[in-house]
Length: 244
Image (cartoon, rainbow, N blue to C red; front, side):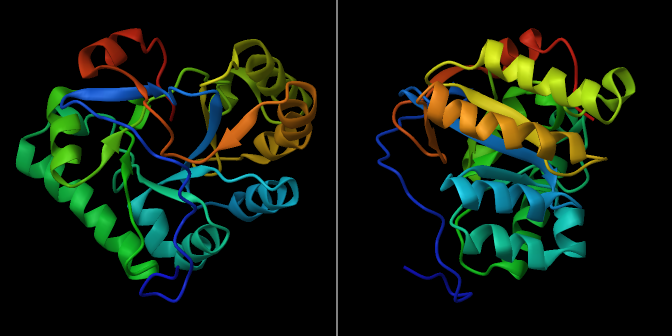
């Protein structure tokens, strides 16, 4: 099926999810593992897409509205390959959830509108708050706009180049973190934008074969099954470090 843009709709796996107000989806709730890529579209988006395509894997891309405005062609490429779209705010405002409700709504709507300028008619079913700094207000507004809030349970800190640099040290850290943390049902956080993500690309050259061929995990786009959820407050309290 094609959207109004003429691009195919993102792939839809079986979806029996039920989402309660004021909660975030922490895991997929099935044996499927979801790869999610944040802060794009960016310089490494096409490299990530090429790796996913070569492995026959669909993922979820959490898009920054201002980046979408700069690179609509990359959003079109994401949709063309059948991936799922997620709203990640207009400019990665870590404090958005603490702002007045009308400001939160305006930011989310502006981001959705910009995405739809690039890919008219394509569904945007998910929202991820920058840094996982969830508030009940942000989750509630996202729900009003038809979006489920998605968190994660595996964070390889590929955003933290200040601690791990760019290159072999970061690549090994990403690989080791995912290998140690992933389990059936995981939602894995990674980044295709927001900085130098060449290490992320290099890491997934190893991780995709590992996840598929060694661990025999089923890599799925969202939505999927009945997601494990928790309150916005619980999600925020568990967040020790904030992605940039």
